[in-house]
Image (tube, rainbow over all chains, first blue to last red; front, side, top):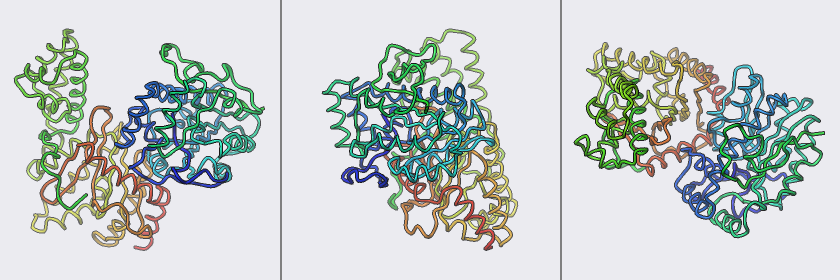
Length: 281
Length: 300
């Protein structure tokens, strides 16, 4: 599952470019804090644990999803900073800091890497500013913006990154918090338009074709009743469409744990997340 | 938080050790004992019986709140099926080290027990978050500022006693420069900056020092400005300590004039986490905070 990005219940999706911040509210569960709890973090509240337990009663595999998504972040950023030679990262939907954050992985491979974190949740961002601090030679910056407000995201990112050189954009477990009404494909297309050929996009997304209908209904019900953010399942073809104008890096779009697994990785468990990395033509 | 203090059940009853590096070690050894016990499928009651104690003693021991005795640890390791002589002797050597008096032992004449406990937890913490409404966080005070605020609360104290308090405070600050320092994230009300302690020169030096420490990668300072109006900090000052070990609970430290409360019931802790989360979201960013402190220095 997720970091955040989506309107609070009842606020409606609105037009693209509208910025809808989640209010800090410990009476309703929040995706960033649920993700923290699934990963064994301590930055979550009773209400988040209750919602997570309701999720796990329907789909116990969510714990593996969260862990596999986090492990993918590590492999993806190592690939991007290493083999792909990327030195600029735009990590949208930062989430609550935990071990192995994007700038740590990137700056471990290439200390001069610049990492810009984007999140629309002021509390998540406060945590990021406090705990996600970079190396002396590299840089770590923060943008307070909603993914859907691509003007703000790109306008500020342009001040912090050199858009004449390749950028890796990571959208991990966040696009499923953007409903169709907000046209996530158009949002991703606007982001990719802004960066030069040779740039990369990494996506993970919950899969409608890896979960049965009853499980999806159950999870949607929990999210509607108890969670601040939306939850949209999408099939492989729809997730692939985010990479329009890009070449998918081998092995292509696969289950998140199958993307260049590390030796010794547990291969018994199966996630329900699609994952891929594309290179802009 | 209401004005009423927490009831006695909420207090961390077992915090009677003195420790710094020893406290850290004790918490780690306790965690290890819990893992061994759970791996062996033994209940706390059974483990307690084995060492002629209660299950709550086992819990305090596993949370690192009490000193470990060689004899108890030896018996527990046998019960948990640890038979490798090398492992056992290493464990017992660590137990002896965990009972070495801490650096603040030399201040025992001025240190109340309830504050000694805090020093141990502070040294063991991986993350220290605080909200300050009156004074600069003790970890960031200059000697002159510390001298000024220590003098306020101890009108009758002899000068040399105040000097020892100042020295103790500076020695605590050494944790900021140790190889594996904790993350210290402190949000202060703007009042803290504007209320002078000592003369203008003392305050200017204190401002400069704050700007310097804020540059440390593991230190974050934020100010909640007057312009933000009323905020969630009706609680007064407090500190939340978090430990690396997943099964050690967060501890909220509330200091009073003659005592301190240690809260670790999750429901209580969450009230304080809520407050500190909300305030850090509303406060100036670390960069804006540095500019405000520099401005305050120019205004002084």
